[in-house]
Image (cartoon, rainbow, N blue to C red; front, side, top):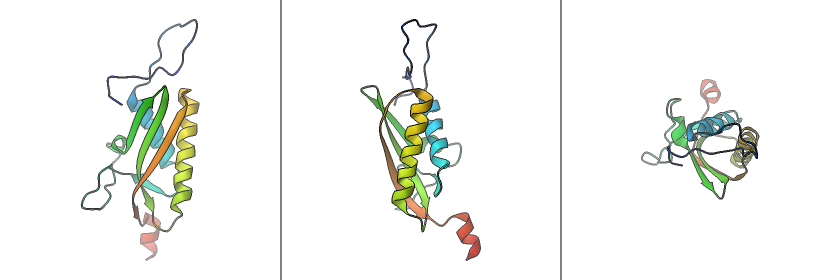
Length: 131
C-alpha cells in the first residue's frame, strides 16, 4: 500500500471529523499480533539472502509485512521465521487468526486474507543453550 494513501476505517452519517489510519499503524498492529504468537522468532525480509532467511531488526520489521486494500478489504502478507521443531501449520494458523482478529477489532475493516510466508526455520534461543 503506498505511503500516500490512508484507510478510512469508520464511516458515519454525521461525521464530526475525519479518521484515517496510515499504513505504518496497520503494519504495527500486524507486527504486534504476529510476534505475540508462540513459535515466531521474528519477521523476515521477503527476499532470501543466498537461500537463507534474513531476520529483520526492530527498526525494520515493517518490511516483513505487506498490506493491500482490495474492494475495501485488507489482504495481508507476512514473512516470518519460525522456531525449528514446532508444527509449522499450527503456528501459521495462529498467526492468521491473531492478525485477522487484531485488525478487525482495531480498524473495523474486514480482512479478506492473511498470507503467512515462512521464510525459514531456526533454532530458538532456548534450544541453543541446551545443546
